[in-house]
Amino acid sequence: MTKIIYQLEDGGVAVVHPTGEVTIDTLVETVVPDGADYAIVEDSVIPADKTFRNAWRKDGSIVVENLEVAKEIAHGKRRLAREKEFKPHDELIMKQIPGADTDAAEALRATIRTKYATMQTSIGAATTTAEIKTALEAG
Image 1 (tube, rainbow, N blue to C red):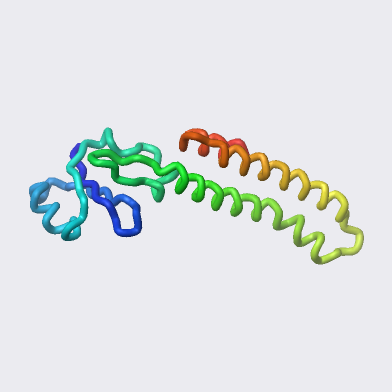
Image 2: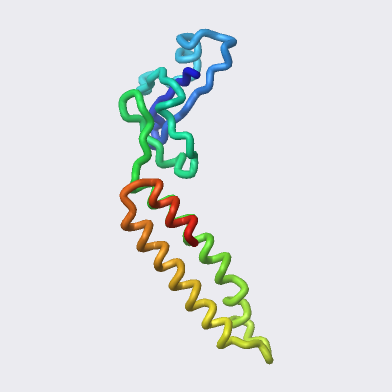
């Protein structure tokens, strides 16, 4: 199916899905900002996987994923996941609850740190967005 893609000012890509109610040229005139670099394309040039949607960039008449931006997105997801895993152990250690096994909590925190350090290294070494996604899923 035909789509309209155009570069956004913030670097991302807008994808317009025509409904068929108006011609594609009319849609371009009404939706695409004046002066924006746009192309009328088929679905096949737009990534099917939207994991790194905010890393999409228009490159001529195709959409590509910017690897460095995808890594930034992945690191953000990694940090959030790590924080979520740390939370119950951080609370136990912070509250110093009598009878609570803070040594076990600290050992679990060390395991979590290692897991996410490995993930961070894998994301940093990735050469494709598929490798970044694999690194995130390994966690």
